[in-house]
Structure formats: structure tokens, C-alpha cells
Length: 261
Ligand code: GLP
Image (cartoon, rainbow, N blue to C red; front, side):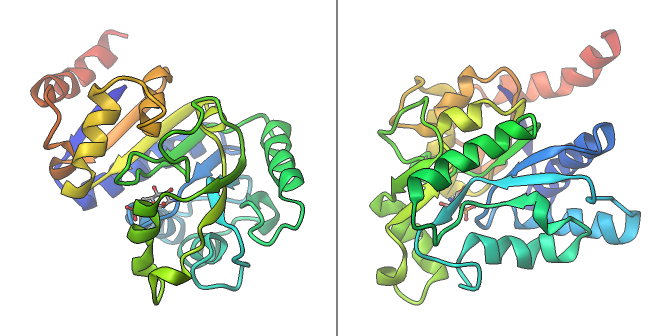
């Protein structure tokens, strides 16, 4: 795992945007895997800005979101389709037909999950998967205790996740308990992953994901097995990493290594 420790949220968003933009420039038909939550909001704002000012072109880009609450339709303010529309899709020149999010209103959920996997496969897989992380180490909505090889499926949200996400709803009772989420196996198939984390409340999950054992109890730890994963964390989220100074030293040497190569 490459670990990039940044000063603050603004820098985190800038660097994350840099990864996305670099992928899009290298491969205009890039397939992006996208997260929701508060963490990627700065990244989406930067991409919108780059589109408006710098002409960043999304017309050939395809996206797959990680997850969606079961029971919420696209018009629901807290659905992830609504989130994406408001923060990114509705503000750039992406073809709506190229934006994919699991259907929160699907009647046949098994089929919806199977179709989602096939769709990802049919476009050649995900080039760059951006991820956030939950306090309990979840990525997408893959909660502790699931399979490290899981595929897109219906998942039950953990009580901590329901509580954390209740800040977006008028009460905790309104938070759906079920969701459709890409699995850890689906995420691991992406050619490259970038995990973003900021704030002290993520420090423990980051420590366990990076320096702990690979275990289904910390879903993000599966990324230790992924050959092309970059973790971008602010100082607070990195605060519990025991080998912080070493990661910093690697970061400083990276330019030098790039020159040798
Ligand atoms: C939700 C999403 C995750 C996201 C997590 C953390 O549970 N399903 O994909 O990473 O929230 O969100 P935040 O960035 O708001 O802390």
C-alpha cells in the first residue's frame, strides 16, 4: 500500500482529484468506481471545478457507485443516486446512461446484484476505484464479518454505520437497515484503488486496515492484498499509524524513485 499523509482536507481532495484526472487523461474511456459520504465531497467539487474551468471532459467516462440504500429511490434526498446527481453528475458533461448505481428500489435484488457485476465486467472492469472508510473499517457497505471475496449483494448495515449515517436523516429510525453493495471481491478486482480518510474518528480504522492483520473484521484490510492501492490520509486519520515516519520517508523518496525508473 502506498501511504500519502497530507496536511488537511483540502490537500486530500486536491491529490485525490489529481489521481482521477490523471486516469482520465491517460484513458478517456476510464471506468471509475465512486463512493459517497462526506469525505469525497471535496474531490467532487474539485472535479466539477476542473470541468468548468479547465474543460475536463467526462463524456466518455463510465462510473459505478459502490452502493445504494435499499428502499430509497433516486428522488429520495438521502439516496446515493440523489447525492451523486447533486454533487457530481448533474454538474459535469457525463452521459447519464454511463453512470451506474445499484437500484435501491429493485424488486428482484438477486438479479439486480448479478446484473451489476455483469455490467462492470462488460465494460472491461473498473480502472480506478475511489473509496472512503467507515469508523468500523467498512468500505462500500461491506461491514465487519463478511467475506473478503464477496460480490455485489444485499447487506445488513452495522449499528455503528446506521448511527453514523443518521446525521443525514431526520432520525435514526429513518436510516435504512439494508443496502446493495459491491463486495470486497468486486472492489479488489479494480485495477487501482485510492482510499481517502480524514479526521481523528477514522484513525483506529486506518491503523487496523494498514498495520493490522488482513481480516474480515476490518473490511478495508483486504486492500493490503491489492497491488495498486494508495491511501490518502490527513494527519488526524494517520495519527495512530506506528510507522508514520517511515511512510513519510517513502513519500519523500518517491520522486527520486520515479526519476530512476
Ligand atoms: C457510508 C458509505 C461508505 C463511506 C462511509 C464513510 O457508509 N457507504 O462508502 O465510505 O459512509 O462516510 P464518511 O466519508 O461520511 O465518513
